[in-house]
Image 1 (tube, rainbow, N blue to C red):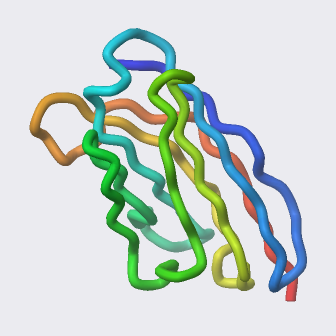
Image 2 (tube, rainbow, N blue to C red):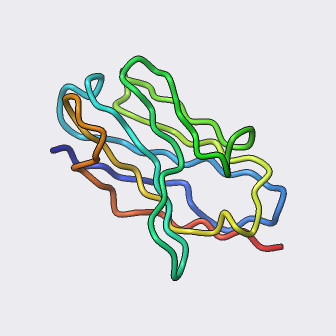
Length: 118
């Protein structure tokens, strides 16, 4: 397992942008599959983006065209650029990771709050 620390959350008006960052400790960062999840009040945690080792990214339909995620293996970091934010994007956002061939995260960050006001 690795330790993950998110930053960059905050409050923004609808239509605005935020950039989340997540830094991982430990080695072999480039071998990890990375994830961004979010959980809104009263709702289940949902996958926002999955960033593969080969740098390809899969997005949830709800964020396609608005969110972009990238990784910097040299900095052990993953980012989530969120544009055209909507009130329904309000949630706690989590960075997560998995190793090997599993697509189920086994390491989680503490989460960062994103609040979008309409």
